[in-house]
Image (tube, rainbow, N blue to C red; front, top):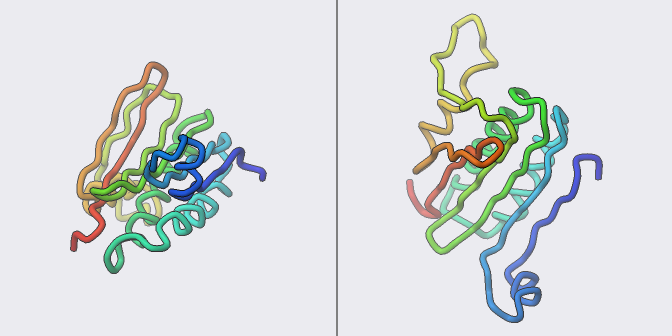
Amino acid sequence: MAIGASSVETVEDRAASAGGHTQPPQLRRRLGRADLRAVPEARRALRELLRHWGGPGRSDIAELLTSELVTNALVHTDRDAVLTATVGPGGLRVEVRDFMARLPRPRATNADDATNGRGLLLVQTLADTWGVRAHGVGKAVWFELDADAA
């Protein structure tokens, strides 16, 4: 696979590898530097993870917001990134970690720029919670969605 290691683990797979203890299903994918092919591939992998998750439209929102975070990490940094999505009892958490210290910020869109500048505004508007967490090297931009929220 061109964009790096990928996995979607089922509850049973993780339980077997953890000695029988059930852990939440998780997607973890390394995203190659500036490889925008990773965006639709990340959406497909997330769709598979969320096949039986959430109320109507929740997985569509998760795919959209994941696309935005992945795209931002690949377009606005010059390094690899890591996507992690975890389905837990309270909902879904998606995190995209990159290795650049510069913090993202939502910005007002320009009417002349129909395709740029809306990513974090979408995340801010549609996610139940979201934020940015500093790492030793870089940051993680994340969002959470409740499974059944309207």
